[in-house]
Length: 460
Image (cartoon, rainbow, N blue to C red; front, side, top):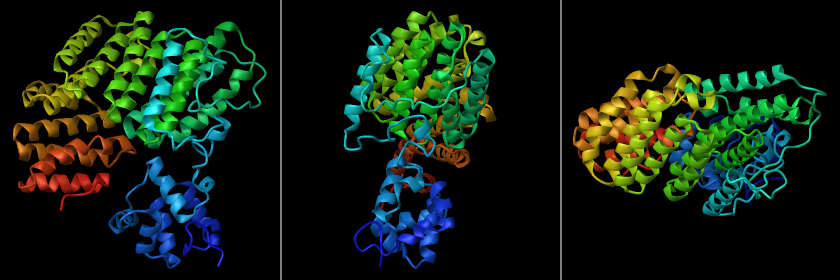
């Protein structure tokens, strides 16, 4: 029998070329892929053995659990013998070949800490004014493919890019990066062509900034869907374009977002270095809001490292900078950070300190988070989910287990409606705190529910 994948695979090669299977693979609907394999007589046990998953994981996926993490999708494709291109894994996305020449993970064997250092070196070179275009950016930065460009563009064309970015950013805030990332990448494919068109100098500079912000959004939505190498690629290109557009405030925003990726990876030292580079750009821009955003995130990094004195000092400076900022006049990429988001950051930093330093910090975290939760509208569902998760952790730390479990369930309810890997991953500390209190039935039920939602292993 002609087979693909692992030696002795029970899956005939022609299975992958059937239209229903091709459609499921293109959409990365792994539950549909597994169900179709079952129709072809492949057992759950065989699927588990080929993909390196447990039978319970396979069962959960068959029931509809989504698989979004890039590394897991790759492992499934390799294990089953799926041609990588059928799942859009040969590149960042199936459309990304038009935007970038490298794969989403060009050197998968390279350690993540090495990739962080390469990005930091590139960010430092850009921020302090070294050559940008023409410099060796490292293997992690993809370079635009030359595509046919319009003969000439004007300000109306650039405004179209800006309007599309605003609309797509709103979708990301409300529904998660998975709801719009493909559209962002497709928009980049079109917008990138404008770089080859002729224009006035004023239009050209604004185009650099518009495309930088679109790459910035592509990086953020990639991060939210678990595509870390892709996020780094897009943030690297965004930084280059923002520098070319002479927009230091946007450079600061891009570096803040890349620092958040490293916080999420529990690498606060590297995150802090990126935030500090962003702080240089923020101060050069003269934007109090940009400075305040960077200060708040530096505080989060220090809190993760257990340094409460530095964290509280930077939070105080963030408040001061924000009080002087004119949010109404801020650009779209920074305007999200208003009084509600400041409260959210204060609550987040104090939640981190309550876990790393002393539970006394719950006393500040809870009212700050409550203010944010009560004021985040439906258009900021993901932010509200994060804050509910943090609030639940604080109540568990205070010993108010029943109330903490109730809020934790609300966080899961809200997160289930989002297309965001990050919301699941941010729930891991909540699961751990609930697991510690497993002798309480409410905590036990919450720990099990979070584990089911996130795909984490439950306690025996």
